[in-house]
Amino acid sequence: MHPSMSDSPLQAISNAMAQIYKNQFGRGPTKVKTYFAGPDAVVCVLEDTQTPAERRLVELGEYQRLRDVRLFFQYATEADLKRPVEEATGRRVRAFISGIDTQADASAEIFLLEGDDGSAASSAPAA
Image (cartoon, rainbow, N blue to C red):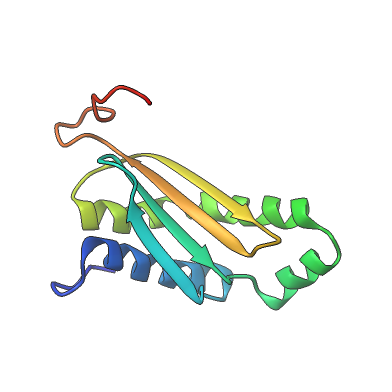
């Protein structure tokens, strides 16, 4: 999915992530928001993405089983998740981190970007 000229890069990423989730899991999020987290990181937060079967796993207390399955699929789709971030930012994703809170039905996709010069990251000291 290419961002339209009217979309901001963050909105384009949000739209792409919602579509990827819908295609990958059979259900897209009802809430998705993408943020820059400093100069070299993008965080996409997705909420309310669980399918009825996944909600049933939560009801059964199978949090780790759901987490394992979801993370397996998220990492299996890593290239698809990285692509819209790279297209929207014009920078290569150097690291991808995915997480899920099964009880809150919230996921976060974190993308660390190469510096504008192709370096690993910003030269700013760690806080």
